[in-house]
Image (cartoon, rainbow over all chains, first blue to last red):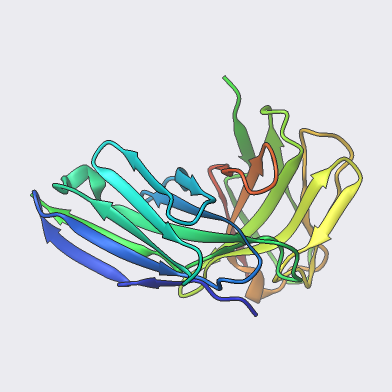
Amino acid sequence: ILNVEQSPQSLHVQEGDSTNFTCSFPSSNFYALHWYRWETAKSPEALFVMTLNGDEKKKGRISATLNTKEGYSYLYIKGSQPEDSATYLCAFYHYGGSQGNLIFGKGTKLSVKP
Amino acid sequence: DAEITQSPRHKITETGRQVTLACHQTWNHNNMFWYRQDLGHGLRLIHYSYGVQDTNKGEVSDGYSVSRSNTEDLPLTLESAASSQTSVYFCASSEGTGLEQYFGPGTRLTVT
């Protein structure tokens, strides 16, 4: 069974703080790494899809890096705002396997206090 | 605008009944997926399809079935609902392998 680990499970920060989360995944049979943002009572929405080792992607104050050789990705949020409060999911897309192709971590729940 | 919808949004059913959850997308995506979300487990894949007449089992497929007769729809059927299938179910679609998935609004199913 393939596992995707995310840490921390939850995080409470003050408005204006910068923060980062970690996603660890198996380094074999790698195809892509996804990051999703999931607000309460809504559906997950894609932030980034990353495929190449060393990839760095940015969307506004949010950025992500990828290391496929060692099997980890970081998500950074610069100057957190209350509207950034959500659960951030990463998902590992791999070749083949009985579990299907996209394995999700359990997420990091971010709460930003004004 | 293209979208992905699920119905019903909420369903209460009894143990042993057959239940079908609908998923409809207008993205014209070949790939469609069903997940369940439970506390402590995150999103787990139930079944997926890469095109019409194609269906595949995911991590937690026991007790569930899907069919794909057209591009737009992937209904999920619980053959004989069990209390362990109480969950929130999400349907998703994507344009191709490894690409971002677009999620529906979810269906909250309670089996009593």
